[in-house]
Image (cartoon, rainbow, N blue to C red; front, side, top):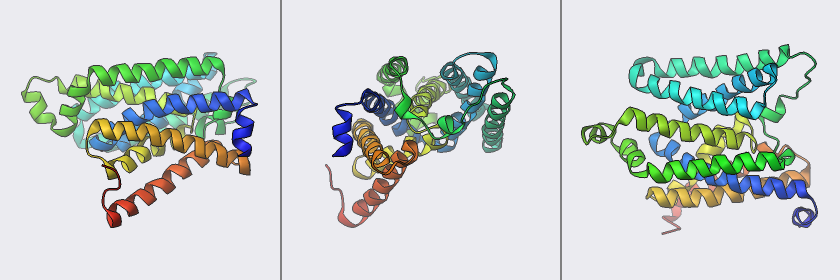
Length: 274
């Protein structure tokens, strides 16, 4: 109750809740495709390589948010090409990009003269410092995710469940797959503000995985995943506010706890939701 009383009084908490809602929209949609395509490692590669763009942007004097966005989209294209052109070495290449991206970001930030930065704000999130400008950008990115998913829903579903059959039916699988990864990349940048780069992959996968315990249709999984993402964010915010803990980690722990509960419920009590 202390948290909700404070929510009525402090604008920074209101901004945090708004950011959580926008992140839930992106997370619910993109996370569903991450789950059904089993591309957690690819999404993780995008998420962690983003630190390279953040560091480069800081070093060159640009907005870290801009650096994250450009890098995320660039790596989405690169990883989409790798998926189809070098599948035999896919895991190794993604791992290399993952490690090198993070290492480059740390070095760029270290080399930036006169810039004292706390990497925790990028690695573990800092939703309590979201500004009006940040909310505007998050709203634009969330809208882009909504539009992309609406326009390419059928193609995404076809490529996700049977890529070879989709290709035979005339679907340009590689292009569609790259667009899908680009949508996930946008979500990574949105979630960076909420839970941080290190925890992005957990928050991308846990709400959708929990939703898939109860639903089978893509639309149902996405909708329930949006709801869960928002609930997890609010619960994590309240928990971190009460006990003065890192917000991003608190949100992710709430999501993980619910996922464990959902597995137990699905296994021993059947489908709870229809």
